[in-house]
Length: 145
Image 1: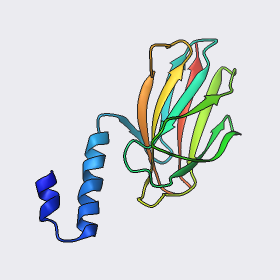
Image 2: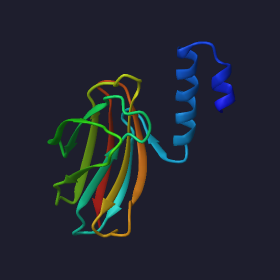
Image 3: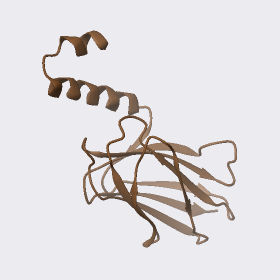
């Protein structure tokens, strides 16, 4: 990989190769794009926590997070360091919406997430990546058993 980068003559070409490599590195995760939804069953009393981060280049991606159309987090800048967002929902169905407010300096808006419920204290229930353009949304629907 480093040899391929050294052969390239322009900064733009190097950015493209780095971007392609970053996309390949993400392929082992579930990737959600505009209007896609992931459904996750959870326990009757489970609490929902999202950990959001930018695992590669921190490029000022910003999102807002909603649960059942109620704003939970406004204008959150995604950083390399994990940011914890507790989803305050006790309803039978909790539909979380992640809305891309921009595309940062390196489009698209990418946010890596780890989802944890109180019924799964050992770690992330699921890891996923959101890949969105400005104004687009992805959805995670939690269904209580």
